[in-house]
Length: 348
Image (cartoon, rainbow, N blue to C red; front, side, top):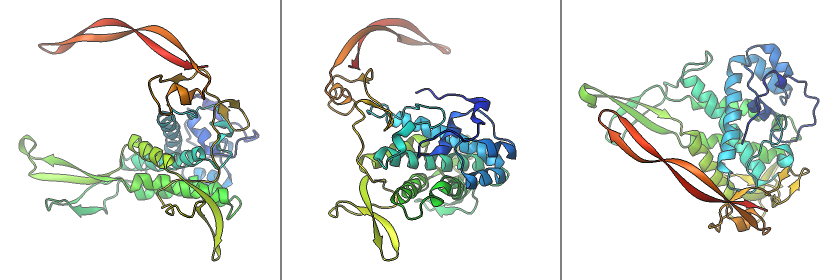
């Protein structure tokens, strides 16, 4: 999906009627560099608390923008074969009205967005781009072979803390105790945990001819593709929840009491998703007419399900590919061009 580059156009006063989704995600649709405090007051989608954080942390805001952009891209990758495919329908409201309801889709977008900010800020810390933070040298441990290590680990504690402060700001200042706010806060945290809980120890050997006479090890974040895939699994197994008062607090509990209670890493939603078969601006659905489908698949990307029973049409086209490649000493690969006809299927 194409992401618009708005440049200075993002610096409009927030007069537009945005969806009740994640308004700050509009940062991910912009190519502008946030380098002064004055810009913070003019950015679309930020509430007052987020503008204060922006002014206090100007150097971090470009990492927030990158996190938003990465989250949008990953959403589109993970949902490319589903009826709702994270289409960026508007450069301001990003996904349109699809996030207005407490659906699975809204749960995923909140989780991937919070994870995107945490991941991007953490990476900026560890790479030395930011003065406010660096890598985490307090982490140490022992490898299975008894090697004690401590190195320059990814500073996920700082990344998660900034994500929590910035991303959760809107929910914490909305209707306190409301079911939708509780849902969003839970899914935001699930997104951040999908990064932190799956960090791994990486090592580099030092010595003659790569021998491990000396080892440097550190804790590193998973790739964001891994984070997206894990949250997509959580999306498929998300728990439908309802708000209940337990003691003095309101909490989300499963609608079906026979289900195992969700954990902090699971996604939760409040209402079932629409089928997204037909265009419906009120729910942010573009429909599936004209979408590419797989005629041999029985899954959601198959023509039967993707096209919602309307049928599909087939087009033939010629594609040119590299083929019959040979390695020539030394040192290049030479290929021929081959043409073949392929069939593509599109929903009616």
